[in-house]
Length: 338
Ligand code: NDP
Image (cartoon, rainbow, N blue to C red; front, side):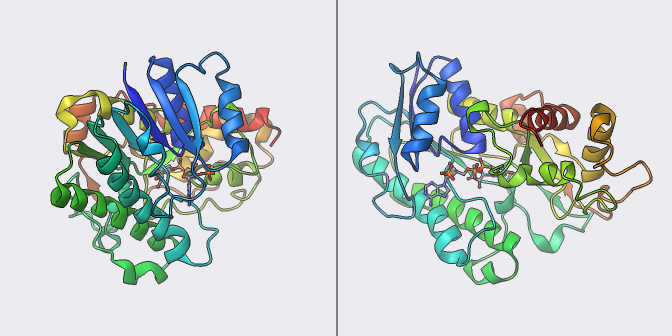
């Protein structure tokens, strides 16, 4: 079994990842921002205290944020997932780009300096660092594991979505540059999921603080799509959160993942497909959901191409279908009283 440092253990994806790691028998040290979140994790695993430690790291934008936790004895793998994914900022550079980039370089420096036992670092990047906004409507363009978003820091004011994509691209690029220049003893794997949907782990499930990518399902169930389903744009690609977590587990286990950039997606989805799934499985919400006459929110056309065959060959994930992902999340939100 492996001793793993997992950053941001309270996050939507990371909480599933923590669950899968504990289930597999690994020892995990995870970081969260507050004692309240630490307590929720400890309470969720009452009989795992011998191989689960929760450490408070209040702000990953501080250069020395990970210096102490990196000194934990015997860490073999680091899974760095913590990075802001929300649109509640007022200063994109300070609140989005800095935590993404400094969080990434900070943890890599701390590991190189203080954690000689670390063999692999897996970083949660995003399709945001692959996609190029200039080609999302271009059916002649194929995004793959080799594609890089050309955005720079100058693009952060273009739109909130662009600012987020800048944060992810610059953070991932900084990680690959660090490995190329510093030649640390560990290798690097990055994981680039597009939109991630699905249920939240029970101990962090809350309608009012739902994570950003699931917000659209809350909006749908609150009646916001009743007369018009929003366009599925610019990223009609997705993966279930349990598969995204599993991709990290396989990335740490497989020697051949070394040095690879993984583009993890189950394929295309549309908001229309989500609404149709909810309508057929949850007739009790029909007064809030769009009826069959509402046909907006389908797949955009024209649309880009993608190819993630190399990732699929390596990870061998059997992707959860979108209908199950939506059904499981809607059932959870129903249980929470939406
Ligand atoms: P969450 O918002 O649920 O998780 C983000 C995590 O980062 C949380 O643990 C959060 O802590 C932590 N965090 C954010 N800012 C800081 C900070 N300044 N200091 C310390 N911790 C911080 O989102 P997801 O689980 O969806 O995202 C996890 C990762 O996956 C991110 O890197 C994101 O970019 C990436 N990703 C997500 C996708 C999606 O559709 N969900 C798609 C592709 C990539 P706290 O819980 O306290 O807020």
